[in-house]
Amino acid sequence: MSNEITQVKGCEFTTDELQRFHHYYKYDWAAAGLVSAPVGKRIQHFVETVDPGIDSNRLQEWLHTMGIVDESEKSEQARLYERFENFDFAAAVGFNQMLADVYATDDVSKHGVGERMDQAKAQYYSDNIEPLVYSEYKEYKEVNAPKPVCPYQDLWDPKGADKESADTNKFANVRTIDIAKLLDPDNVDVLTIGAINLFIDAAKTAYDQKYFAVAVVNSRCNGPEPMFLPALSSTGDCPATLKAAMRLQIELRNLNKTKPLVFFANGVVDTSTLGILMSTVDIVTSEMFCVSIGSVSQSSQKFPLSALYDWAHLSNHQAKVSKGTAEYIMCSPDLVLRSAEWSTLGLGIGFVSHRKFASGMEQILLAASCPPPHTRDALRKACAVESVYSGPSKINVWEQEISKYFAPLADGKTVLELADELRAVKAPWAEKYVVFANAKESNNVAKARVAGMQR
Image (cartoon, one colour):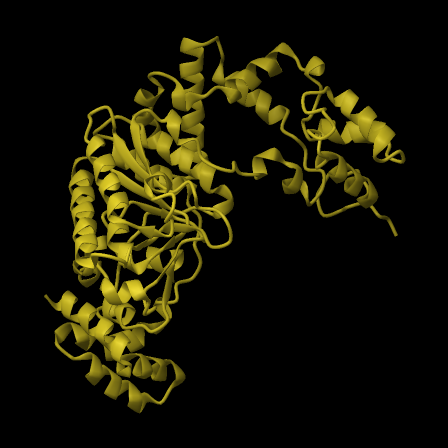
């Protein structure tokens, strides 16, 4: 039986060869001191010190099909297009003036926007840097596109790997507020009054006319459970902390009336700080985003969920939300809202995978550099382009139960009355609500939330 890979049309390399080539591609060239070395020297080193049995000619043939060649082998045309592709348009003076035309369309497909963006870049580059004909560039890229050589090409393709972090500093017309830089270095797990006041001060600087948009990020969002927006500090003067958080929400909401405010929520948000996040609906999430609405933590007891007006008026967020949905969420004992639920509720504008989050953020920030009055439209269209499906929502499957049992809470039914009705259902999901409603601490939290939404 042939051991050639046949899953990809045109593949001429055996499984053994591809495994060896993969080893070559992932080799630690920095440790070998060959990061900037020509391909030929790298191959020589690899054959002599790592894998003497590899066929260097076949390896070089594979590298050619992947578009990896020595600098000396590149034509002047190839070097021109490489300089063009490596040019930093985000920092290019005046390029943002061309973005309105890129997004001035109803076509927000990745291909359509990408085509218009490439045309705008080519025009700017040709007018300001060196001559370049877009039609010739496009033809060259089509002719010289790397051939598919095996089903694991995405593992080798550099374009398949995302940047570790977004470079937000190069977007001069976007005021970026980094939550990580506001937190107390000795107490990064909570949002103190000091950190909140720094947040307010940063928001006030964003009113400057040189900023077309405001972006809130957290550069510390890393690890298996990254924290995007930590809990309000529950030590000391809690009422003062809550008042400071409310001042921040008011400041952010006022700011959002003057220019787009976008949160890149690539991590966990505590229930006590959820109101800060909900100062805008321009929220981009990833699979790392979540908020445990039902958890009766120390912070949720001391700081009943804020932004209850927004929860009571979910239909204002351009989402088809059934009556009682907010009450269902508020009274849930263990519900964790993730990106799918957040999108269903109409509280966000995009989902970008964690693997692509940094590059996606840069593309959205570039669009946010578009001058007003087109800024918000360009930002949202860029979000649509970068977004992918976030998965099925856990809320949609309970629509019937929400309408029957939880909708009446909006009309005056009490939490204890809800518990009595659910006790008669005699189902595991209903029993969880009964236990939650009967426990003193969680009952107080649920009653405070429902009462707040009824006002």
